[in-house]
Length: 263
Image 1 (cartoon, rainbow, N blue to C red):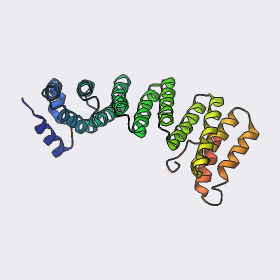
Image 2 (image 1 turned 90 degrees about the horizontal axis):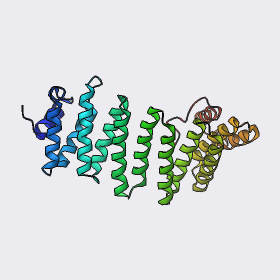
Image 3 (image 1 turned 90 degrees about the vertical axis):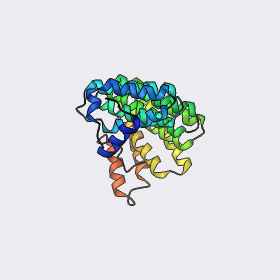
Image 4 (image 1 turned 120 degrees about the horizontal axis):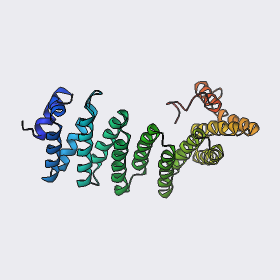
């Protein structure tokens, strides 16, 4: 059975599901994508991957996932600076991570990161790729790699003089250091984050950093410092936004992590 990219894209867009023949003939899919790349139509192959990854059913055979991964690797090697490749790799990493194929998910994440590094003009894109890669390492339990990803994101924002991004990564690193029981390091990161946010006039973000700082001090047994940090966290929101104040108290107490309504 012969298939073209146009045929496959039409099938996918009409049915919004992975065609059955892919499970039965994964080699044909691999050959189709490779042929597109070899014949100078790698963008078409990448477009196909962007459509395929979100539709992969949970019960699909692992062989299909591995074949799709191989397709992505091949296309990435042909289009090393394509933002479409970065998108395909992000989608692929998410599916592979969900299925527990962490080594393959990390490889997809590294290809995405490589694209953004070569583009070298969007620190948010680089940081986003690093955080997605960190999610794979976290799922795998490789916390030293998670720290490494956040460290690189912090350095990226620093090199670009992006104060907001820099403060955000300091805050993320501070929370992570609490999680891995490195509270001394957490205090350093969170103190810098809070100071930077205050200088930028980002009041609620500074409160978030102070709430985490309170938690770090408490875990170190520095209860007076913890109380001071909590008071600084609550000062701008108590009586103004009680829901946020409650969430900040929960964060400081270790009851919850920061919720989606906090920056």
